[in-house]
Image 1 (spheres, rainbow, N blue to C red):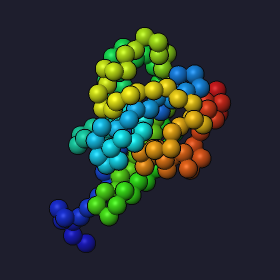
Image 2: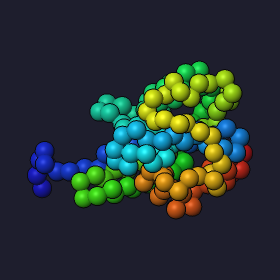
Image 3: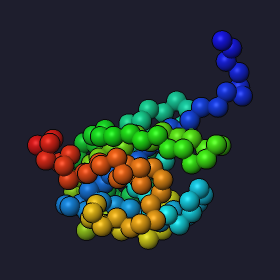
Image 4: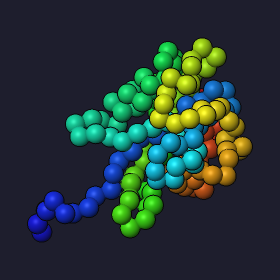
Length: 146
């Protein structure tokens, strides 16, 4: 079998489930695909980066965020169309100072909000939609990890 440049591989993304009590942080996407949909904070893994490095890079975009140790909790396979296929790794962490951080410092999305998992809006970014449909619940993970 030959490996050629034209072999298409899925992109690898990291998503953060940042909790504040019984709420998670979501923002409205400013880019495609699915511009205007709601997503978790996150981003792509770049060549030479580990998933944990991406977690800390993305967390640093929220100035002053204090948090506990992130824990890998799930993954999804995301097929947007025949051209865009990705895998998302999810890391959950607790925000320890939600009232002290300025969410507007992170410009990956607009309208950052803390929402209860059960109250997530309808217009979800595909990876988050799949995670929710798969039955993931950040509140159950908290109970199991204690």
